[in-house]
Image (cartoon, rainbow, N blue to C red; front, side, top):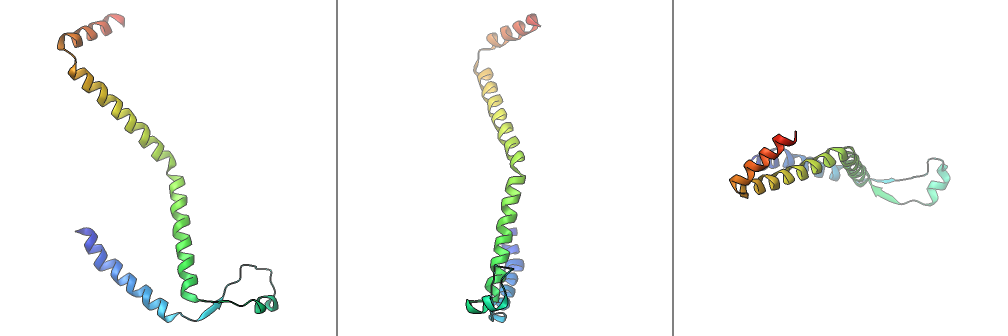
Length: 117
């Protein structure tokens, strides 16, 4: 239910704003990746790209790079999560095995542990 509320009250207006922004910024711009190129060199190889595409592409690259950086930053947390999940599964297996064992066997194991310490 919360997802629907977020979808209707946040994502739909945001999408409308982005569409209006794209329609308002259709003028062509020249994208140059060489900061040392002189003006006459860029004038010969002119390829115009709509401004909204440049901005959306930069936003997309930023989101992807942020996601990759977050993924690398959380690697220790994921490693710990896997460790504790394996440990929990191991303890559950031991508990199930102890529950299935006869009660007299469990008492003998406890006596053995007390005498060995």
